[in-house]
Image (tube, rainbow, N blue to C red):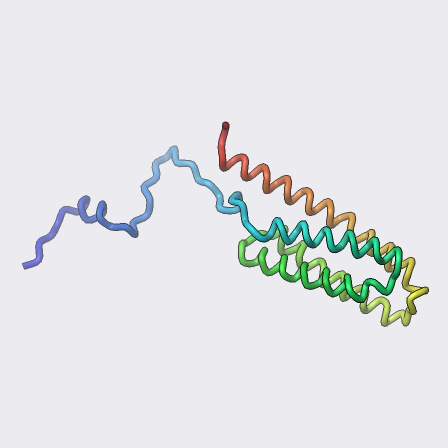
Length: 154
C-alpha cells in the first residue's frame, strides 16, 4: 500500500518548491544583471549614428547607406530590448527607424535634391545624435550602478 510520508520530508524532496525567504531576505532585481547584446547594440547604434552624421556633412548622398544601416541596427537593438525587458533599449532602438523614416518622408515631401537636403538633414542628424548619446551614456551609467549593487561591497 501507499505510505504517507511526513509533510516536511515531502517538501524537502520537492525540487520545484519556491525558495524559503524570511523577513530579512534581499530581493535582487533581474534588471541589474548584465544583459549581453543590448549594451553592444546600443554602442553600435551610437557609432553608426555618429559616423552617418559625419558622412552626411561630407556627402549627403551617403545617407542612402548609413540610414538603412542605422534603421537595421536600431531595430535589432529594440528587439533585444524587448526580449530582455529593457525599456531604455526599446526606446533607443526604435528611435533609429523612426528617425530614418522621418528623414525619408521629409526629403520626399519637400522634394529636396541633394543640395537642398544637405544642411537641414545634417542639422537634424546632429539633433538626433545628441540626445541619443546622452541616453546611451545614462543607460550605461545606470547599468554599471546596478551591476555594482548586485555585486555588493567589495
